[in-house]
Length: 124
Image (cartoon, rainbow, N blue to C red):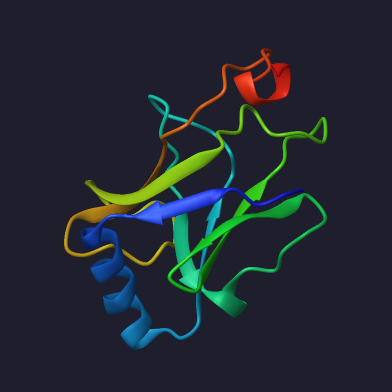
């Protein structure tokens, strides 16, 4: 699968730098599920999670790869063409490293294609 463009807010970059201070290198991983359009990836030391055949590189931000797991049918729910990595209030999910005290990472689409429809680029 082709990776997409991923940018990051200054707050997300600072959170990655903080996490990187203790755990080098890092990776982010998302199951592809969305809550209100957002994904909440887990942040881990790179060797902490064994990637499988259903895990694909979504993109990279500040040298940190972001992986997404495809669904059981072999696809992704609805992939955007670009995302922004940010932080949000709330506890880190599962065994994720936190994005700061009481903070977690969030991945938001910024150039979404509607599921089941072609983008304008594909139509022309």
